[in-house]
Length: 246
Image 1: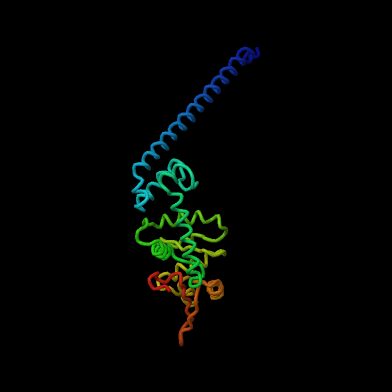
Image 2: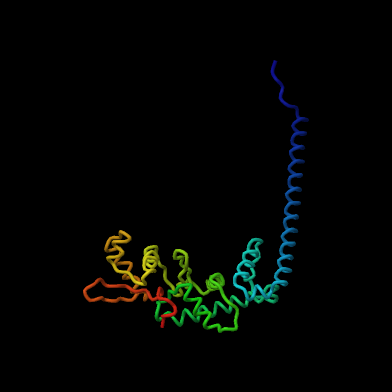
């Protein structure tokens, strides 16, 4: 005898059950979305209450301001997204970073003749703080990086270049390759580099070292010092200590 398959009624019942499970799953998913949205609104409300309570600390203490920024980011709130609204009115954080951005531009323009538009984040911080005066808010490296991020709207200038544990800020159009950033990293300790040192320390071919150094000179990022009886030295003004810079 041939085995009979499931009847039409059984198939309909199975399809109906699957549809109900699907509908039930959709309802549960919608409920979860509603609950999550409600929780996010509660978090944002608590964040606004926290910001109101600690307004003074957020404005004056760079470390506290960093922690506040990280707390905002954890729930998808960007206090810098607009210069209007609650955050600007209550904290002035939008205005703070836009003002800081203008000061960064001014410092970079004032020093570009010396460093070719490449400055260390530490020197930038010192110069910006000096231009702001004594009675203004302290600023941190994180504050500078956030303000520089806002300067992206100016085009392809103002690039942050990681250099080990620190950063270099490039304020003129142009792209540094991996060889160029490696060269800068290698020169950090002494402020200068020679072609023979690159060949010896990095195992580069002479032509590779020459191209990298020539590019830095052409872009105004390095100065040449011909030492009598020694190798030509390539000095990087962006690596000079800020206190001795002119």
